[in-house]
Image (cartoon, rainbow, N blue to C red; front, side):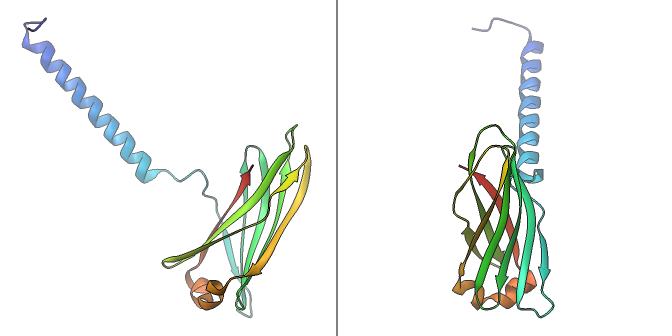
Length: 154
C-alpha cells in the first residue's frame, strides 16, 4: 500500500536516488583513477658517468618523522641505502626505510633495519647487500628502472 498516491513524489525519489548513484560513481571513479597514492613521492634518478651505478634520491615523511634517502644500485649487484630520520616529536619512534626497485615486470624490495630515533633528534640508517637480480638486469635498470622509497614508523 502506498502512503502517497501522487506519482510526482515517486518520480522525485527515483531521480534523487539516480542522482545520488551517479554522484557516488563519479566520486569513486575519480578516487580510483585520479588520486596519487599517499605514499608516492618524487624520486630523482642519476646514472654515474661510468655507467656502473645508479642513485635514486628522495625524501619522505610519516607522522611528522621525516628524512632523506639515497638508494644506490651497482652493476656488480651490490646495493646500498644511506638514509636519515629526524624526529621532532616529543616521543621517540622506531623508524626504518623501505625501497622498492622496479623495472619492466620485475621488482625487488630492500630495507634498513629498525632504529630508535629519540625525541627531537636525527639518526642515520644504512644497509647494504648483494642482489643477483640487480646484477642480472642492471642494463634494464639503468634504462627503465624506478625506485620508490618510504619511511616507515614502527
